[in-house]
Amino acid sequence: MSASVRTWVVKVGGAELVPGPGLAALVTAAAEAVRRSRRLVLVHGGGEEVSKACDERGLPVEKRRGQRVTTEAVREVVAEVLAGRVNVRLVNALESAGVPALGLTGVSGGLLEVRPAGEPPGELGWVGEPTRVDARLLATLLDDGYAPVLAPLGVDGAGGVYNVNADRAAAAVAAALAADLVMLTDVPAVLDAEGRGLAALTPTGVRELVEDGTAHDGMIPKLEAAVSALAGGATSVWIGDLAGWGPDGPRPGHGTTVRPGPRAPASLLPLRMEQVPHGRS
Image 1: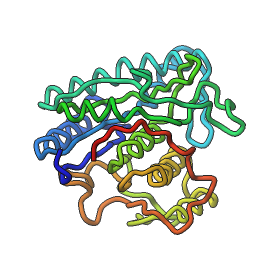
Image 2 (image 1 turned 180 degrees about the vertical axis):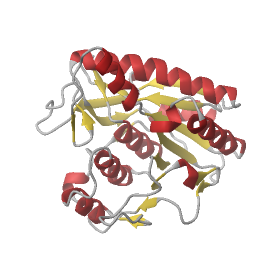
Image 3 (image 1 turned 90 degrees about the vertical axis):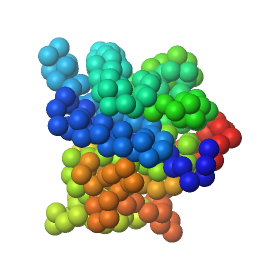
Image 4 (image 1 turned 135 degrees about the vertical axis):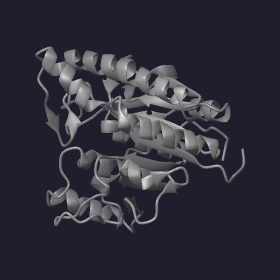
């Protein structure tokens, strides 16, 4: 594989997962990127559909710092919606656009290993924090021309299956593959306290946004995951909407680039990610 060929891990959520213009625009962009010999791994969420399914079953919807509290009953809904409905829909849409896609979960081949998340660990129920990614499996699929599509479920060493925040799962995968991380969201960029888009952030800036409340809800795990990805080995991190990302990468003047700083806050650093060597550049 040529050193000029870059691997992008693209985290997808929101409108890009729902049948309609958003999904169509996503698969068009992905198809053009593949046509230009980019290697793609897509990691998807699906939180709105999970919440809707929980409501229909009378299950509580509770989130802490942007992560879903996951009881055993909620875990079953998460698996059904993400590994089933959303993953199949996204794979089918990509295939229809000419992208060879293969649906996976983090349970497949023990691809994504986790520990109980939260402080103290386990406070979120069946929510996992990534600790190890099998980069060999993903690299093999990429080398064979596939675009892996990953539903964020993980496993521990005792057979437990966990819900994993999609941003954190994407960050772990990007770190393990030493890839560029693209975090698609529903806003054009990360915003400051006055609502202005930020062109760049460092870990210190991330900490300030979280601590002063400017970043809230789902943006918290996204920003923390961005810092973790860089600390773990990702080559770049960009946060923005689909309009700001094209087949050659982020468009100039769009989105927010998260850059390494001189000292990342200890609270934002990940576990030392145990990567399975994959022997590819």
